[in-house]
Image (tube, rainbow, N blue to C red; front, side):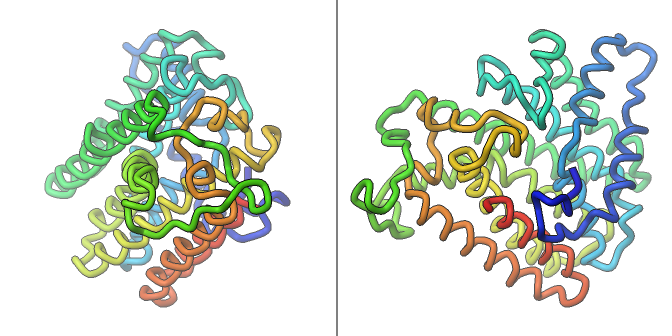
Length: 325
């Protein structure tokens, strides 16, 4: 869908980048003559599924913020989206979140079968690093990019966050109660940033700074790496990524409680039913909405330090918050 669709009245800042992203993803779906047709079809189905393309766009935005060309970072944009697509395939599996709808379409294990879905995810994960090493001509930049992406996608970040997210479902002391508290229905608990007030909040943030935030952070870092950004620029982008990545997850949690499945493109209400640890479940709807607003304000403040070149990042921050309406 377009970021400027009627469902989203705020300009996301990168609609003009989308054709470049989509073309590059299409071209990347040539997986070699040895790739079985069914596996290739499943990989393409996941990678080309309609989506916002936030992560590849972030790679390009970072390059632009740091004075570089968006065309120079397209290989990294593709690689990040491959990692994202793989993670969604595996997240949707019966052993994980057990979803049958993703981006308004049957999930990969429903469309094909579970074994093919697992293999498609495996292949996209490794294909991402092949794509980087093949298309980034500078050996030094290729090594730096592979290192950065491998850490973000690895055991201590993306995968570790997913593991802790699943574990929280099996730990009642962490996950319960996991229903949004609404003023007038239950007594509201005033939370602070101190973990002693509610340890679930600190644990939840730890999960999502890795599970969701890792790919936001590495997207911006890859763009910076490939255009030779300086350390100050990379630090600013890192701060923006920390705020926008967590805000995205808070809003995503809110949408699971408030949106319609037909609007969101996936089933809603599943988080509470499964006992998942979520921001509305821990903080209540109003405080979760307030947290999202505070994170977006922080992201906007960081983007403003780039001046005119940070315009897209400011627009994206507004767009992420608008998803909750």
